[in-house]
Length: 406
View 1: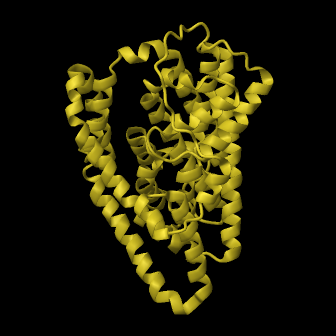
View 2: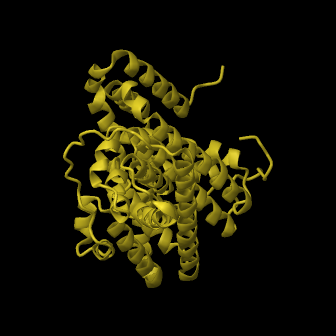
View 3: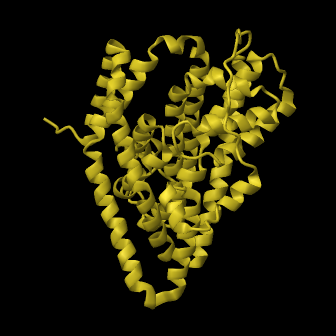
């Protein structure tokens, strides 16, 4: 009999969590601390893992190659994000979700106002790198790690001992990831059981169309956009790729956090696809911060949903504004649970949709968040895979386009 691997136990825990949550209901909230512990353990790994792997990755790459990786990643992130928003807008407009829905008395909402773009850009440069690490500010950490890695590269032989120390930290972090993952089945069971038990089936009914459209968009983006990109730009069988990286979107689906899933994503891409440590160490941390295709798609769908609910005619111009702002807002979204709901306010404000509409989405946002985060993480691996292929790395050795075995 074939031994059940870690991923198998995670799926079993996921299924049991849904069943038990549906049966037990509200008392499942007692399990929330066990799920929270799982997320905290993953988050514990983020800062040292991102800093060490990014420094090692950048220090190992020549400046010319580093420039190539950066522009390829940014170009792919923007293109896929634009496609994601377009998919969301088309589906939402065609289905007319939200039309005629009674808005009723909306609860007073005091949303967190997003900072201006200039403040966001300046915030990337840390005044205190150690403080940024202590606060878990990923963008400033990435900025400092890239500069620090370049400095080690330029310093040459004199910095080899420092490079070896940081490389050792990176390898130790990967071992720690494996240790933490032994707790994964328990954490997954607790998280899913708590979500299903708390929300129940009843909360899904009024917003079934919104959930269905979002998830249809997620499926289309992964099954069509990413599949075509990885097949024709990465020269890899899409199904084989998804099978090799499946642990990553599964963790993202449960934790609703691209950042918390990053340790799993980096391990999976290196161990299961043959991606180099340098490429994974540079592309994936950046992707977990700025590559949010699922979030962009979600924001497009929700904006149209709320516009229809409030009887606002968007027209072509309104949809174009949503397209642009959703791309920018998604790229600026933190990789943590619920961040997409906050950044959705940027999109709503741009087209004059009342921000009180957030109250309509908040109740089911966790359910939408699960799917969009899985898409975000899948996109990170696809972009990294394409870039690795263009850099001449031998991914999935022995498997060519058209081969269906995993």
